[in-house]
Image (tube, rainbow, N blue to C red):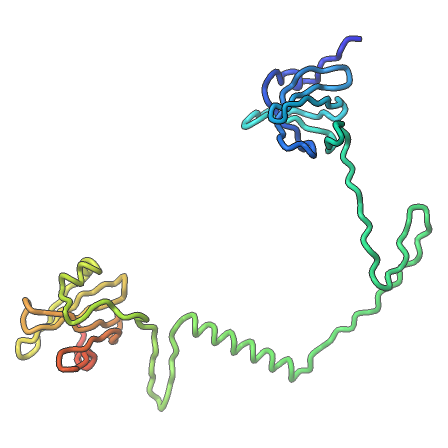
Length: 260
C-alpha cells in the first residue's frame, strides 16, 4: 500500500526542528525533527531526549508560516506520553465535597427538581442621623487629607492671618567656616549672586539656588572676608541658622535682614 503524502506544509519540514502546540505532556523538551511518515502516523525524533515517537495523523493540525524562533506544528488534541505510548489527554473533573445542607445533585437522566427561590432581600437603611454623621466624617477626612497633601495650613486668629508652609526638613551642611568657594563646591554656581552693604562696612551676599528653593546668605566685614550666615527660602523665611562666635545664633540677624 502506498503511503499518502503529508498534507502541506508538513511535507516541507525536512530536517528543520519544530515544536508541537500544545506541547505533549510528560515530555520535557518540546523540540522535534521529522523522520518519516506512514499512511496513519508520522515518526518524529526528539534530539534532547534521544528517542523517537509515532504521532497519529488524525492529531496533526496546521503548521505555522513563521519559523522564528521555531516552526510550530499544531495538534488537534492535547496529548500525553504515558507508559511509552502517546494518547489523548483527558482532564478529569473532581467532584467537590457537598456543603452543609446542600440538596441532592442532579445526575444525567434524572428529573430536575424545582429550585427553591431565595428569600427576598430586605434593604437595610441607616437612620437619617447616622447617615449625616457618616457624611460629615467623610467630608472632614477628605478635607484633612487635602490640607496634608498641599502642606499649607492657614489659621485666622483675632483678624490676623498666620501662614504655615513647608520648610527645609534637614540641616544644611554649612557652618560659619564655609565661604563662597566651599558652598559652590557642594551646590555649584548659583543662579543669582547679589551684594548688600550695611553701615559699618558690613557686607551681605545672597546666593540664590532656585532648584533647591534656597537663598544662602553670607556676611563679613569686607568682600574678601565673608562667611556663611544662614539660609532663607523663596518667601524670605529663615530655614537654617548657625551658631556664631560668642554663643550667638545667626537667626536673630537673619530675621532683621531686609530682602535684597
